[in-house]
Length: 466
Image (cartoon, rainbow, N blue to C red; front, side):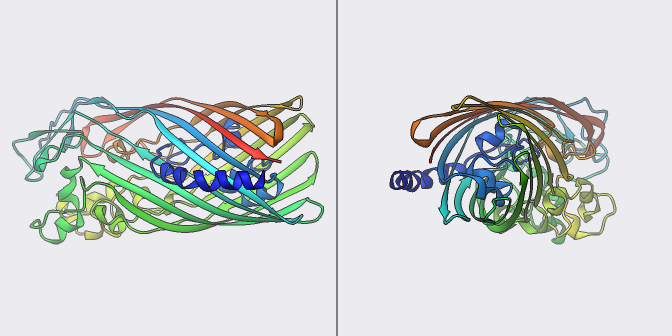
């Protein structure tokens, strides 16, 4: 079996690693609600009751309590996103940048998200794992719509209307607006447990790749550091419509699991912020000249086993979006840019600057609950639910049309069917009910912006083990 599973891992890993870089999902901000099919069926909980190798994504110490096995999985993720803008009283006059009124549904509603992971046992107390998975990502494609503004700047003007959400038809660009952010991770983990199997510690080294592209945001050229620093004579060339750009980086994770008895377990895992190379093609868009690091996360979980057949799981996850300037900086900083027409004098508050305007996202705390019920020797059924406050303040609507990650609740179910020879088949289904968020349009105070989104996800995985 070991030789066979190793061959399967080698032959499939490269294909899945490439495919993972083309995935996109966004459930808790742009993090997934769970990593691994069994965890997803528990709404992302279960870090203190590890049942799959992909527990290393939240707590590498949990690896010590997973059998030697190979896992391969594929998720089908569908986010349904819409935005609308209300009527304006200014319609591009007096310096206003008016969007529409538009009512648009994003294209691209189905994405494929693969994963693969393998554990090797090393003696009675050591475990090694290699996992490749996608986590995070955002894709929007807003076709159509219009924007009205004065291309020459604020003040009484003859407004002009251009195609696209942000008037992307300006400067000859296509009217379609949107972004495409894709992330893939390679996780090499090690865990060690004491002889009594009551305590384990673990650590993981992570390598990440990101791919990003943006379209239809040429109307923001006048708010960039490049434009402002040149006194309005140099147009930015690294803002929009430059095709895909790649970013690479690394980070680490540590974890602890404590099993004082058969009834109770506690898990604690921390993943550092991942330092990523800049998106050079979009250094006029993101703060810090194209910076886009990956946030740190903290995971705390407990598992309670009232009977041998039933396990109750509860997890709390903290996602530190506020540690990433390009994600957390407020769009309001743009008005301190010298070319914003508000009397500002700070070049570094312009798009692309050290303090450049961003999406204004806040940290997220996600609460997750799950129940696993073992039925006989071959079946395990799971249900779960999670809740959080979405990360986008109502004062940060305009730029977040590009990335409206507003989901708050997730309801999940799934099962595992054990087969002969240590093999098993698992399924997880997630539904995130519709969320609607409305707030003022940052560049036209007389109109509002509304986001609406719901999601579903279906994941399958197959495992070969002892």
